[in-house]
Image (tube, rainbow, N blue to C red; front, side):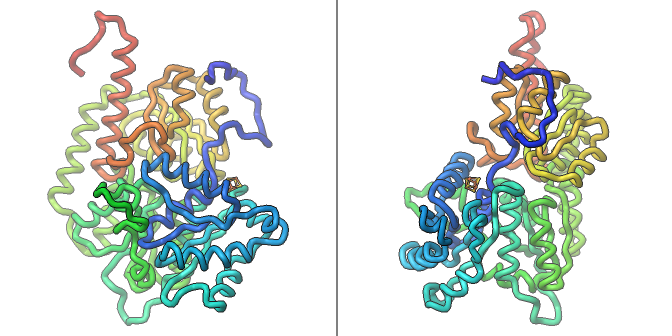
Length: 455
Ligand code: SF4
């Protein structure tokens, strides 16, 4: 399909071809689904909401529920206040959520709808039942990306719900903001925290929501998700740990200011050192020892790295995706002796570019970039492995490059819904995926006399 891509690179300022990002509301919708009993509400046209729901459904392989203000020409001209007020009333009477998380879209942002005022007026008019809550996040897609939308929604949880500490002493509990990772990753982050024996609150937590067990019954609000009562108590906890600067920093900054709570911002725990940093942060904050089994788990990862290094060493890798994922993945590739050759993000960010250049000094690094540039660059500088979301398969096919799916969205495989890529176990899975893919490629192309049975 992309065989016609030329090798000649022309610098473009005003055009992106297949950008490595998607709409802000997609991230906001995902974050909202990670709260128990929460209905995400898209304040815009039906088309936005339908696209965002279907994109999430295709990645998570689960039905994604959200409501919409259903803008038509009238709302586009006169504003969406009437639509949102009616929607709030209908949502509570028909779907009975605990909380409604409104996010905006391009259209409602361009109109300039004042969402807090609309929510306030709806409450005054008795449209919000006693004990129920409506919150909002601004998520215009003409800036940022789905990660910004996720970050803005997480920040909204803190802004609207967290209350400053009442007692003298903070509770011995840690808020963990996991960043924009899959439910399987959130489950693994929880397992690490459980194994360390700490008390924590994960915000949000999409495990058991978007990977819930099949029991033959449909539940509009699955059992998982962060409880609203827990969100209200966030300010009482001793520390907030945020994973992934882009996805988690706004929430951390707001909780630090609003609740005067200490915070710690870390990279996503993908790879050895990033997982070590996460485990260490929890260990120090809670004053616990790392259990022997976790030390052994890490040791098994190191053993696997040393076993496989002969196949991975100096392999050139092209990566693309979301900045938080790429930072940790680039670091992990360097840790295991591979060479990140090009790292491409769709999200803007000079700070991020600088960080990646520090981790992988020889790499070509671009934020605000696209798949077309990635493809053209690879044509000029062939790589051994391509890592990124499902859209990479087009480039991989055109150039016949081994390809490992990683990040969001993965629309054409299923493993990401069940198997984590974070923590020590996740790092083992990534090594397995990379080595298997490289071996498969070699086996397919090599002459019969070179076909190795044992690796
Ligand atoms: S870019 Fe804006 S208008 Fe288009 S689907 Fe995304 S939010 Fe809706």
